[in-house]
Length: 283
Image (tube, rainbow, N blue to C red; front, side, top):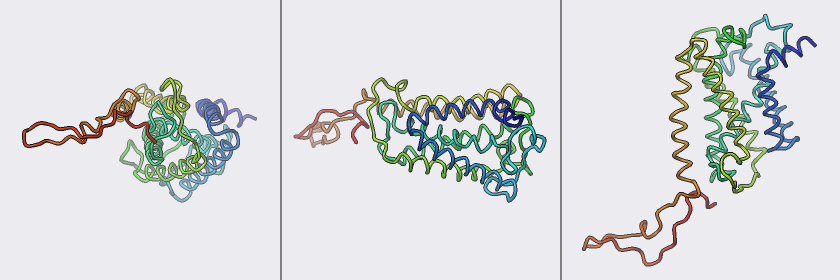
C-alpha cells in the first residue's frame, strides 16, 4: 500500500493528468476504445523505457533513480508512473492536433494526414520541454528521477532520445487514428469553447507549459525561454490559419479567379460566375 500511495500521491501530477485523460477520452472514444488504447499505450511505454534502460533503444541509454524503489511501484526497471504517462501524452497530442488541423468550427480536417502531422508535432514538442525540465527534478517536486549516460545537444538530452520518442509517438498516434478512423466530420456551433477537443488542447498546454514555468522558477531560463520561443510563432501561425478557414472568411469568386486582361487594359470577368463560398468548409 505504501508503494501504491507513493505512485498515486507522490506523483500527483500524473494522477491528475491521468484522470483528465480518462474524462476526455471516454467522452470521445467510449470506455472500450479508451481501455484498448490505454493498455496498448502503457505496453508501448513499458517496453520502450525498459528497452532503453537495458539496450539503449529507442531513447539511448539512461537509468532511473534506484532510490525510488520501495517508495513507488515499478514495472521492470522503470517507475510505473513513466509508462502510465504515455497514455495521456499520446491522447492529448492526438485530440489537440485534430483541433488545430480542423479549426474550431469542425471536428475533422479536410485530410487525415493534416491531423496526424499536427498531433505528431505536438507529441514530440511536448517532450522537448518536459524531458529537459524533468532532469532537474531534484530542484522541485519531481525529485531526482533519471539521468542519461552522456551529454546531449538539447539541454543534456541526446538526439537519439528525440528520434526515439518520435518513433514511439508515431506508434501511439497510429493506434488512436486507427481506432477513430470512422469518426464523422461535424459542424461545431459556438466555436472553440464548444469544440469537443478544446479541453484536450487546454490540458496539453497545461502539461507542457507548467514545466516551462518551472524551468524559470528553478533558474533554467534557457529551457523555459526556448519553450516560449517555440510556442509564440506556433500560436501566431495557428491564429492566421484559423482566421483563413473561419465561416466569416471568403475566398475570391470566379469573377476574380477567371478574369482576363484584354488589350485595352481592362479586366473582363468570366461569363459564368458563382457567389463567394466559405473557405475550407466544403468536404
